[in-house]
Amino acid sequence: MSWTIQANGLDDQIKLASGPVAVVPAAAMAELQAFRDKLKPLFHGAGLSDWQSLQMQQNTQGDFITLEESPAAKQGRGFFAVRKQASKNWLLQAPHADSDLYTGKIASRLFLEGDFKAAQWNTVKRDLSDMAHTPNTYWQMFTQTFAEQYPDAKIIQLHGFEPSQRKTQAGEAIDMILSAGQKIAPLWVQQTSGCLKKAFPKRVGLYQSDVQELGGTTNVQGQLLRNLGHDGFLHIEMSKNLRGQLLEDAGLRKRFIDCL
Image 1 (cartoon, rainbow, N blue to C red):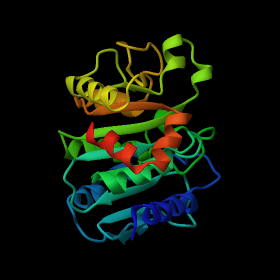
Image 2: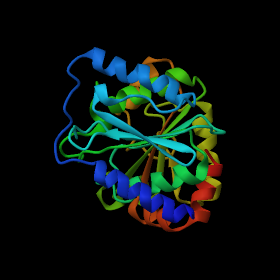
Image 3: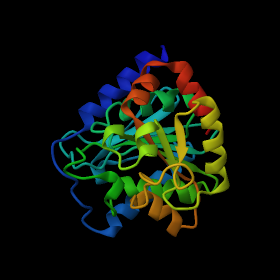
Image 4: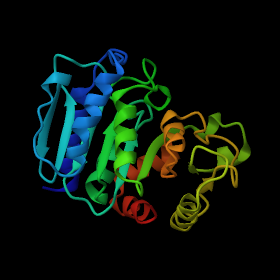
């Protein structure tokens, strides 16, 4: 099966898993802790688990497992994929998969082509519940558990922006803005920025160094990771033009993956 066919199938699953309601908060922290406890063996290659107590279901698809809500219990928890064996402890995130045009589909293709350990997509519209700015969710607990299991993890989050709505000339002129969600980026983020600048000449900028906006500083996943003492967060903003190119061009996606 080609990557495109498999990615299209994954896109369809995520769309079916999405619901019209805002996120229903967990009834208690114990519910999120139960989710965390079930995730740990999943990250380490365990087989099928019983998710009925959390109204979720797990399915095996080739070399990875998907986790989603039961059809009768769509509460915006999210759609998750975990590869049984992966060469990189990387988590790919699309918190605005539908509203930030193409980011969800780009994430599907990158996940399949890049040997990421895991990926997650929002399943509720951003104007109802914004996963990048809503704490105490299943989405957030998935991020936390992954970071706790893999101290060397990279958590790479995809976003989209409109250059014409930027506040600065630098923001208007660029196609990709990288940040760590804070003013001073860790060395690995700086190195990733340098690689992407070579791979996408004149199109990439690093927050604070090259551009002063869209730094993801209020992003709750980034805040969570910093509170954990984990420096693996990479926030990526992309123009619509670049997103369209990444969606259609496998060679361009490979150049992107090779820099991570």
